[in-house]
Image 1: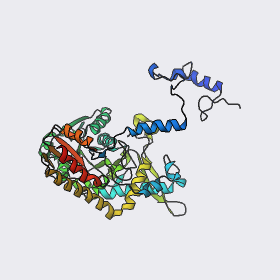
Image 2: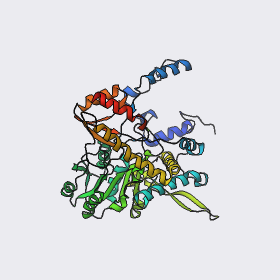
Image 3: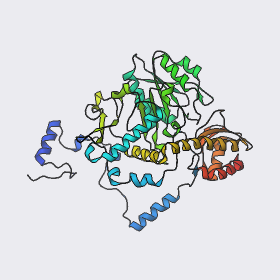
Length: 443
């Protein structure tokens, strides 16, 4: 049969087949299937003047040269660590880079084994039983935990309690997730950069479905009373969710030991580097919630010759074919980023991962001490142990201090009228001396 390609070489149909399908859905043309607003309709012209390769490279270069060359002391959820070159060398192999989802285990054993090791790493760090592989970012992982609370709690409840200092973007994603099951996202108080357990105790009731706490917190403080927060949640049968990341968990107490039911967080602290918003979400939970876990799980078994083999052992198929019954809206994953995280962690090894975490405590402690000696600066604001970052009080308006630091080639977060936040890791530690000199100049 002669076929006519209509628009795509991958979906060829004859004219009669196309007509039959249009008749079945009750429209006269393929265009009638789409409702595209006139301002964004393609009219056949891109209105981009033709240029030579040399001209295009020149134009792109001039545009990129307009970008400010700043040393970033930025954090608040997005962190950069040095990524060894071997991570790129291995992750860019064609069998990894071109693989979408590893549905065919017979041709994806290497990838599946790396993902299994990634899951095993998270299980060991958190003390929980099951890690998925993987989520879009920390915010979507938190949203999935909130919807999970509606499927696994023994009593009803529609309140989700989060710290009042929860980062605005993360809260916005959580609230979007909460709209579907009708959850109410509410805040509990914090004190000195960590949870106010007394205030949380007053906020929680039997209608609370989930309590969320972070360590480190958005201010960089290590949560010293994580177990007490877990006790408050447990007293009301609320799901206790902890936000953290794999580097911090190499040093901190295991969330499971503090009573955590779920651990979420940003996994891109390993293997990714600066991505300006792109992330890779961590989701780890108890074995009792196994069949409610969003996304995918890689499992190990044996093949017909009794050799160890890996495969995708569990995923909620309803998310693909019966959306109204789906437990999750995650239809894809960040497998390549999880692969990079696994490679990075394997290169560091247990001791190297702990060394990196200890550096994340030492660097901000030392920098805060140096800034505290600068006239007009008090650092850190909170008398707490810090991880990667801390807040500093400035006598001068914080926005003006940040603007002057930008002129000197440095970027920091402005938290409020007289407070900035500074993040330091192995990636920007080389610039600490110059940064302190700049603060002395502008503070």
